[in-house]
Amino acid sequence: MNEKMFCFQCQETAKGTGCTLKGVCGKEATTSAMMDMLLFSVRGLCIATSMLREKEIEIPEEVDRFVIDALFTTITNANFDEQTIQHKAEKGFRLRDSMIKEATKHGVKVPGFDETMYSGKSDDFYKKSVDVGVLREEREDIRSLKELIMYGLKGISAYLDHALNLGFKSRESCAFIQNTIAAITVKDLDMTQLIMLVLETGSYGFKSMELLDEANTKTFGYPEASYVNIGTMKRHAILVSGHDLKDLEMLLEQTKGIGIDVYTHGEMLPANAYPLFKKYPHLVGNYGNAWWRQKEEFEKFNGPILMTTNCIVPPPPKANYVKRMFTTNSAGYPGCKHIEADEKGWKDFSDLIRLAYICEPPEPIDEGTVTIGFAHHQIIKLGDEVLKAIKSGKIRKFVVMAGCDGRMKDREYYTEFAKAVPDDVVILTAGCAKYRYNKLNLGMIGDIPKVLDAGQCNDTYSLIMTALWLKQKLGADDINDLPVVFNIAWYEQKAVIVLLALLSLGIKNIHIGPTLPAFLSPNVRKVLVEKFNLGTINKVDDDIKEMLA
Image (cartoon, rainbow, N blue to C red; front, side, top):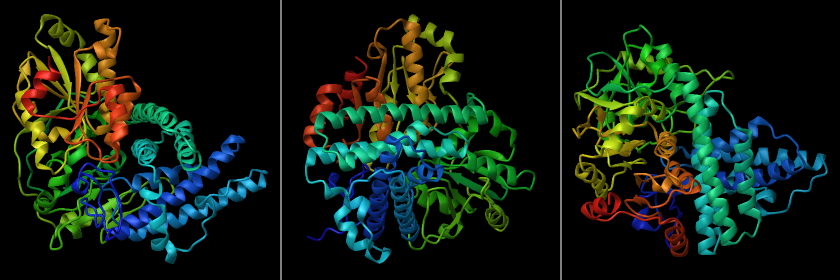
C-alpha cells in the first residue's frame, strides 16, 4: 500500500473517495498525521471531561477553549503549520492527564482506552498516527456516521470560536461537544443511535449560529442593506480575509487616520454591512472573490494580508505574497508570522502596518459595487413589501443558495443556475457560494434585489429565521410547505453543520452539491435520501423545473 494518509472531510477529496498521498487542499501527509494526533488527544481529553461532568465537577475554561481551537485547527484549509499542530497535540495530552488526575482526586475512574492511556512522546507521533486516524473504525456505516458527527462538531467549534472572541460563550455547547466526542469514542452505538446524535449535533449547530448572530449584532449592530465598493483606491492597504470580525475591528482601530486603507476579502465581505464598521472611512471595500482564487489575487494586492481563519490556499513555491501573509487564531501556515492575542484578547498588528507603508497600492481587478446586508433583521424590515410581492405573484419562490465555493469546474453550475432562475424567484444566499453570481446583474423584483445576501456561512441562520418568519406570516403549518427550496453548495465542515442544522429543523428536499460527501457510506446516503429527501444536483434546466415546480 502506498497510502500515507487518509482524509475525506472536504468536497474536493481525491477521486471523490479520499486523499491518501497528499491533500487536494495542499495538506502534506505529515501534517495530516499531526492532525490525527491532535484529534486523538482531544478524544482522550473529552473522555475525562465527560466523566467529570457526570459528577458535576466544573471543567476549566482553558479546556473548553482548547477543544474548540483544536477542532477548528483541523478544519479544511485552516492550518498547514505542522509544528504548531504538533505542539497543540502535546498540550492536549497534558490537559488530558491533568483532567484524569482531577478525576482521580474526586474518586472518578476514567476508563482505560488507548485515548486515555497513551503516553508516547512527540518523537512517536508519526508512528502512532497510523493507528488513530479516520480508518481506525473498520465498520463503514458506523465510521460514516461518526465522521459526519465529528465534522459537524468542527463546524460548531468554528462558530463558537468567533463568539468567544466577542465575549459570548455557551458552556452547554462546550459540554455537548465533549460529551459527544467521548460517546462516539467509547460507546458501541448502533446506526439508529448515531443518526439521532447526528440530528442533535445539527440542533446544537443551529444554537451555535444563533449565539454568533447575537454576538455579532450586539457588538457591531444589525447588518444594513449596503453597496460595497469592489474597485481599488491608490493608497497603501491591508487585506483581511477569513471570518473573524473581532480581528477586523482591532485592525481598523490601529489603522485609524494613518493613511492606510483596509479591504475585506472572501468571507469577510459581510463586515461592510455592520453599522460599527461603517464608522471607519478607511474600510474602503472588498477586494477579490472566493478563497480559491487567492493565488493570483493576493499577488496583485501587493500589500500585507491577514488570514483570520480558514480558508488558506498554500501559495505556489515562487509566490511573492507569502512574505506578506500573517495568520491569527486557529489559522497557520509555515513561514507566515502568527499573531497571538495577549491575556486581554488584544492583538498587535503593527508588523502589518509597517509593511503596508513600503508596499505598492493594490492593482485593480474589479470595479463597481455589490449589494449585501440582507440578514433576517433587514428582510423583516422589508416585510410588508416582501409579503405583498408574494401575494401578488411577483415573488413565486425563494431559492436558498448558501454554502461554499470551490475550484472544481462543475461549480459553474451555480452560476448557470442563478442566471436561469425565473424573474419571479428570489435567491437567498450566505457564505462564499455567492461569489459564483453576486457580480451578475440579475435585476430586481420591484424594489427587492433578486439576490439577497445574508452574509457569512454562519449567517445561514438568518436565512432559516427568514423562512420561519415567512411560515408565521403566511400561516403555513409546516416549514416544508413554504415557497422556499434549498440548493446548497458545500466544501468543508462549516457547510456540514449548516446541512445538519437544516435537517434537525425537519427541513426536507435539500439539494447539495456539486457532489455528495465521500464520507457518507452508501447505506448512510440511503437513509438521508429516504428520511430527508436529500438529493444532489443534476442539469440546471432539470433542477430548475424540479425545484421551482
